Image (cartoon, rainbow, N blue to C red; front, side, top):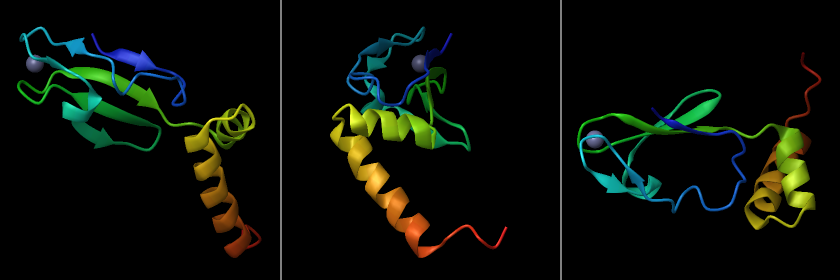
Length: 92
Ligand SMILES: [Zn+2]
């Protein structure tokens, strides 16, 4: 059963060591990453079993985490706001 990380900015999920039923273990950096619209999956590199599902943050979550002093959130927020300034959403 894959573990769900509902908040992307939760500290420590990247480094957490998870064990697969096939006896492989390691953290998210060693897993096979697959990007989807709303989540990113991390699967066992040995057998392909899904180990971790991380929800992508909403803009509100990014803003809240940036306000709370999260450096990665602050960097993402800067990128988002720059993109929004450059491509205003007035075209519908
Ligand atoms: Zn496995």
